[in-house]
Image (cartoon, rainbow, N blue to C red; front, side, top):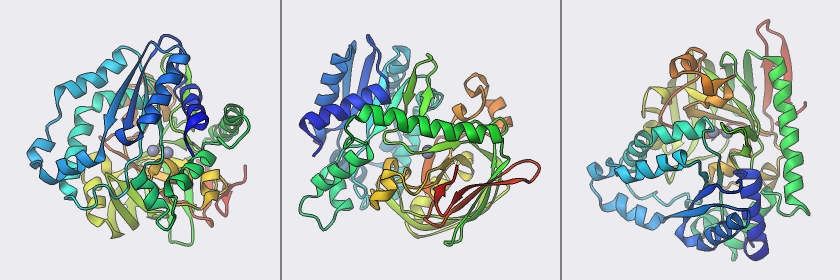
Amino acid sequence: MLKGKKLQEFAKLVLKIGVNLQEGQGLEVVCPVEKREVAHAFTKEAYKLGAKIVNVRWNDEIIDKYTYQYAPIEALKEVPKWLVDSKNYLVEKDFCYVAISAEGPSAFAKVPAEKVSARAIAKSKALKKFSDVVMANGIRWCVVSVPTLAWAKQVFPHSKTPQKDLSTAIEQSMRLDNENPLKAWEEHVNTLQRRANFLNEKRFSFIRFKNGLGTDLKVGLADDHLWTSAKELAKDGVEFVANLPTEEVFTAPHKDRVDGVLVSALPLCENGKVIDKFRIEFKQGKIVDYSAEQGYDALKNIINTDKGTKSLGEIALIGKNSPIAKSGLLFYNTLFDENASCHLAIGKGYPTTIKDGDKLSKAQLEEKGLNDSVEHVDFMIGTPDLSVTGIDSFGNETPLFIDGEWII
Ligand code: ZN
Ligand code: ZN
């Protein structure tokens, strides 16, 4: 169970491998109020590592649920200036930022979808400056999850001890069952980096996905795209890992060069809504048709957010033998599920997945094919029979995945 010594180890792993907190730096932790012991563990470990100050910001999905139920939609579109200022303050003062995302997957299932998305869009727009900095690695940040009761019940609906079971699954995926988790992470991160280097040397023009579900998609890569793995370099030159756990090697698709059909491999949970069994068709980079057996309205809201939510911003490769994939669990949480399977994202691309992207202007990034949006929504397309092929500008093909797993 993620408590006591294991919890301290978890916090230490996130602070050292995740945000790589340096002595004298500030830390902000966003934490569900239900898991206050997690924030306590982070606070203690951070001070032990020499943090200057630790700020904790609480969230509570029951309060959020009432807000969606009773507040008028106009009020949900207003984002207080203090919230925007407080985020920009983190950048100004060079804080590290840890977000503990543990939303119950169906927390907002019974509230109107348009209210949830109105607030999400208003927040994304108001906090664009902050998210631009985060996505360009202007600060060191890390997203992790801890088992809340509502979430655990959804993952293990028939268990008498759902929270304990989810704890165990999270510990395994975080490699905390390893004798030396810090060392295990260093080795794992190096393997991912080796694959990213291989892909960067190949300079593929397209990546093709094919499987028995009906996915048959050619994803063009952005000019000067850079395959990136877990380990990233922040603007201050310090390494960090932005998601824990992480299994992915990813880069930027070209926003105008995606053609074909994709079929989702796992349900997508976004803003407390579940979207399942969906299919999206692309022509010249744009979504031209889509359908979903469950959550069609939520998918429609995502796609219609802005111009950029009609194109892709990320392509990520993950083998089926990752600890998360091997668990066979559906976590109903993108952080885990996206590491179980190859995925794509609708919306904003990461400037860090373009060579020297942090030094380029918006227009220059766009010219290279990087997509921009207020949204970034990941969804899974990897299945155990997925084949992935790299195609270079001469049409030479290099198999990368056979039957859902890396062959390089
Ligand atoms: Zn990803
Ligand atoms: Zn993503």
